[in-house]
Image (tube, rainbow, N blue to C red; front, side, top):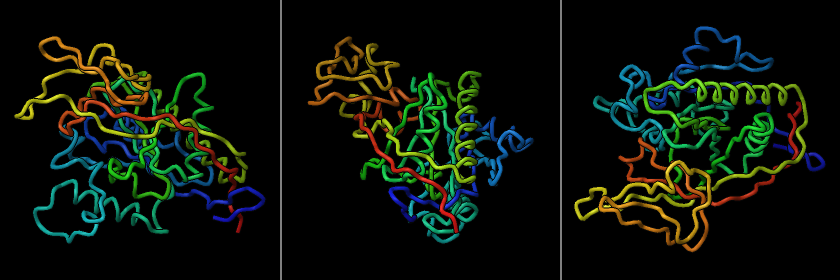
Amino acid sequence: MSSRIGISCLQEAKRVAIFGGTHGNEMSGITLVNMWTQNSAEIERNGLVVKPFISNPRAVEKCTRYIDTDLNRAFTPENLSTPEVEGLPYEVQRAKEINRMFGPKGSSNAYDVIFDLHNTTSNMGSTLILESSTDLFNLQMVHYIKKAMAPHTCSVLLNEHPQLKYSTTRSVAKHPIGLEVGPQPQGVLRSNVFESMRTILKHALDFLELFNSGVEFPPCTVDVFRVQERMDYPRDTNGNITAMVHPHLQDCDWEPLNRGDPMFLTFDGRTILYEGANTVYPTFINEAAYYEKQQAFMTTCREILAANAIRKAFK
């Protein structure tokens, strides 16, 4: 990256992948990727090579989240460097294959952008997920998408917490972007969720085409929800859940949770209140896939990130 009079000059983004089926029961991305594999006209843009890709085909075939282990947590240095031996978990094998095809992760040969398409059972609406607060390219892209989506809301979740960040499928790319759209039950395809995801991808690809054509994007700010903490359900001494998400919290993703607000409702009818010192903004509330991860919801704080003007670096 070079800088000219306050403008960050970035390398053009030529190679783009769209991943569906990282989780094999999240149907919007799977359906879009299969559709675009058959006919790619909708995702073609000048100056881009766009590859739609089913990332976990065995899980898709069985319509299950994963076969052996969560592919979206499998891209650790240990997994990617482990020798090819018999008996590796399927998703570790697949992570190594994806890293060879679209990486290597962290290298100059890696794909420029990977969009990883997900559905959630939580009432999150349309959400873009970032892994870095300093990636000017991604900040400008999500700013463009949010403006293009208006008046519809498109939230931005930032996960760079050192203890909570995980090794995602998309992290192979130089500029990883997650899309999380819901609510949608696992194994189900809802037309409104499908169309929202499709529209976000259209705007994202439009941004890439404009950037590669030499368009300069002025300085901007982006409202984000920064990941803070994972909240588990109350449990007994045997590890069994003893309470549910409170009705006043259920479906209230991105809304403020203040000290003293209802958080859980025990099976015998007792309300458990939020006792944190500061207001937080919960998300992934009562996500079905996160019961196994011992997570009832995730807390976030609101933040405004600033991004310099950017344009393509000319050789």
